[in-house]
Image (cartoon, rainbow, N blue to C red):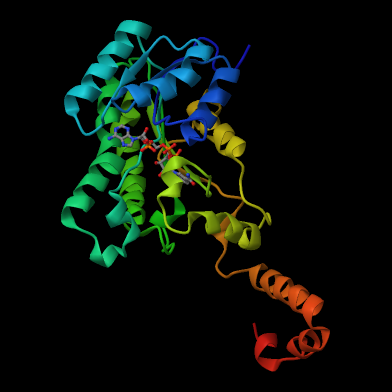
Length: 292
Ligand code: 0WD
């Protein structure tokens, strides 16, 4: 018997098999969960999600644009019709117009900000409100956030501001829905290569930074984020609500670059050594470099 045997849930935010929502869905399925999925409206998006969801027997695969109240209401009405009631909901959605995401936050447009906050933050509230109506016995709601909402991560720009608001939303929603036995939590994942991540400037480099600076000397895997999301959605986390759980190999606890500076120095020196041993020797004795 799996952790989710007999449990039913809805997943919002699978774009393809790289999506974090899919990594979590796979773990939920392995534990026996029955899953329904939403996709962005459009044949192409539907095909992408069906390719993944049909083989695991999803009974509900339906379009949802979280910017539309009526879409969200319809989706949960369909979920009630299909499953009777839900035990969990995974919200794995974020969006910002590319120009506003790429520019420094100081230059972001008002319209872009409204869109990004609507899709990436308010959507959790409206999803939670509708989900609560089909969770008469309580349940668990999980969203995905990033450390760029807690500290400045250059390149994360406007999405960092959205994630700060999302983190606060998790806490307020946990308070609002607690009396209905509904828990609300977030997984704060380290960098994972996905469609959404490719829109964030220098996101590729972030993985390397985690390998250099995280206490565990590596970046997380997609599977680890999948397992952590599954855990928060499960009854194993029955005492946890309002939590922002970091799944980042410890990166968020660092107050300095840690071992990163030594590692970068070592890497550069080994390359210089190969090309010019004398220069490498003099760099090793360089007083300015020794201070780093
Ligand atoms: O490193 C990463 N990839 C991290 C992602 C680190 C930490 C957190 N996250 C977060 C993201 O910010 C997001 O909240 O995880 C969540 C999922 O992101 P993902 O798995 O990285 O990205 P992706 O596979 O692109 O899924 C995001 C999906 C959209 O996909 P596309 O790429 O087609 O925009 O969000 C959905 C859509 O499926 N989405 C919407 N769904 C309903 N209505 C809407 C909308 N208006 N807009 C986007």
